[in-house]
Length: 288
Length: 202
Ligand SMILES: [Zn+2]
Image (tube, rainbow over all chains, first blue to last red):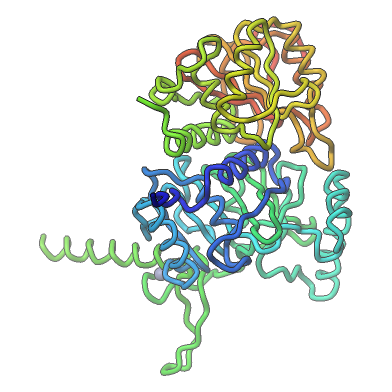
């Protein structure tokens, strides 16, 4: 007899282990809970941590959205969607509002998430102190003792050298006043979306075998100095060349024909959604 | 109807996860719990939570007079091994557990260390109906402003629990279950207020 394929790829024992680790992660916001990361049918570092979280969460009633660098159609996002769809049969969507589970790499969607949604972030490097301390046994002790002067020094040196912090993405945050945490390689623009989020946020690192979490309504502060306050990427005075959006994360591009620098939404599904709505409005207008 | 070990357990897990993420929230697992009425001596929701989290890789401990039967059945269903309260990963306090026994075990159980705070006991405590006026407020991560405590808690219980969580991140996390499929959580990060109208100070 042929064994039935496993729902959501993982066997129930693996899911159980991930679920136990996830509950601890939620109970200790920002603390990296070790787990026995499984082999997934993708290379580690391509979102296997996030994927395992998604597999441990997903049920028959879920609707999944997968984002990679703001886009739903990248190779990575497509292969994750394929795997989940093939092993669960659940629908996938590009619309943030329709999704119950959102797995993302590099972005938090522009549309504010709700308490009915869970955001899963893929993490390549979960340890925010790794840059200056190679040994896991030492970073664990530093977290235990709340000894974060190294993290502050790192930022301070950047300011001395460049006049500002140079973290492009993955700018460290302080969770609930206790743990310094890597928010995953989201742009600084997205850091404030973690603060007192309505949605539960789970982070998974497959290669490093860590799960951590930001519960809803939890204090998230980006590390900064009083005289050098934290700043997200600045897009003031700029707007999307397609949908005209302002106050969103924009990609800069050089348009060959005009020789001009233009901007467009990084969150492509949000952009498409806005365009669609603008079309609808025009149609309504035209028929009146 | 039989309990579906994939889909029913997934549903329970999601409820449990949202409860742990939102202290004071009460989840209703009645429909699933109706399929889990397998151990006469404990609430179906208790059995559901055990089925969701326990397997041969973890240990558990059951308190109370009827511990023996519950212990045997949970071990049969989950393959988890029974362990003394000081070592167990999961501690189950059935409704019949006396408060002195519960508090003694709470003092003795694993709270993890500052380096490994996850190596701590997760409690499954059976209670009367969740959601009755409890006279205490909860605050902390997962709670917008304030939430009502899901269940009345004695001063002795709260002070023992607070002592156990004072060396955060070490601490213990609590899951409450009632006879009607209700589940609610109080993780270690939650501050529990003094009883309304009492002079007791945390
Ligand atoms: Zn746009």
